[in-house]
Length: 274
Image (cartoon, rainbow, N blue to C red; front, side, top):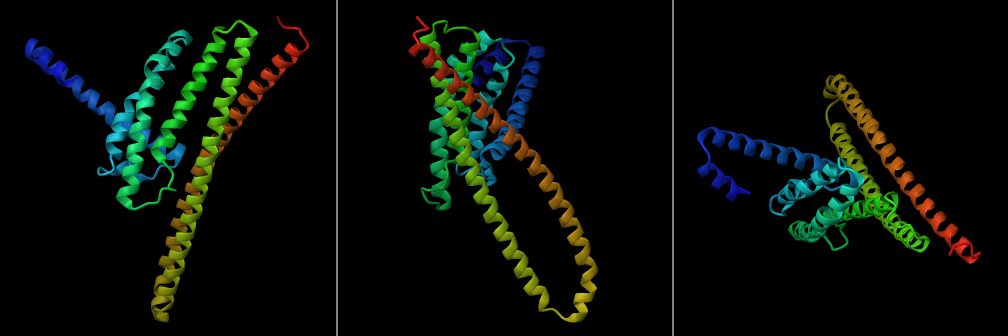
């Protein structure tokens, strides 16, 4: 893209030169903003630590810039009709996310090596890429069913079984990510409690006169911390509600697929299908 831009700059007049420069600035701005949005989504969906996303040694920032375009393409695919969306997903999105899995594995390995972590540490970037890849595959199969590409009952039964498998894999990945997130939150709460206990011990060693002078300030700080904690609880509860709603929808889809597969099998055993 940079080479073609340079050729256009030399071939076109000055007016087009400034238009191309404005277009390049706009593309850079959109890439940076999309990278920030993807980073927030990674922290929300897969509990990716900020240390991985903000690090330059581990390749976290470069990975965010790399994954911004495929994630933007997933949003662009939703604006197409179902026929074009299915073709776009099969020809562009799925191969792109296949390459992203290898790059995410490299980023996770570099993150573990840089910070001296064990192999049992979750693969944060890989989990995010796999999660979105399975979602794309499940939607690709669902679009084929909606477009009536499987008119025969045996083809439809196999596709529904495949969709059941994808939904089960998606639910398992979501469950493992949620379990790891709960463990990290519990560890964070323990660290905060230990820090508060140490601060209380340090404050207890001061004189009685200094305690009286700092009592009012302590009350104000407690009120401010309580307000911030309440805001954090509200935000986390809203995000938890969205996650539970999404998880319930996945369970409903999987149960429907399993029910249809068993229904077709029952009709086949009753020799009602030919």
